[in-house]
Image 1 (cartoon, rainbow, N blue to C red):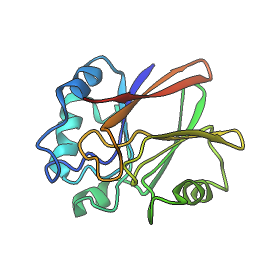
Image 2 (cartoon, one colour):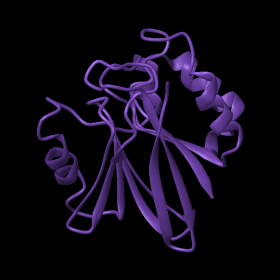
Image 3 (tube, rainbow, N blue to C red):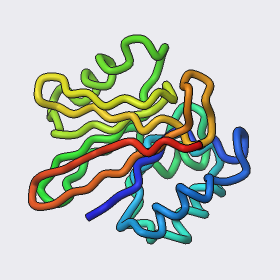
Length: 166
């Protein structure tokens, strides 16, 4: 199973749409994980129209429309292909965000935590938990490059990686 991992798309505030390269990966994927800050409910509906809603795993971010706050949770836990996954947007300053994200899941720690907010691509392991921030495919406010992620899962194992955009 292959999923595109997004966060901080900020559509239409920072871009009118996702870059074509991201859409190309979406077309070849089984689902989407979005760690918040879609910005507009219409963009969420655009993704849902392309990819069945049950194949979109998403949380709201701090910059999302009220409709997204009402429809999407702040924190999401689920299991795919035997892998426990958590998704949370994140809050506060970029410095120290990983510790705040880990605390959010302290009661039932997943194997993989996907988060956003900082727009910085991150992949690190802390105490056996992989923390992954895909970065932003549309905004470089705190990052040198735009990016998103790919998550591949099979039989209880997973691989997550960044795709950098030009």
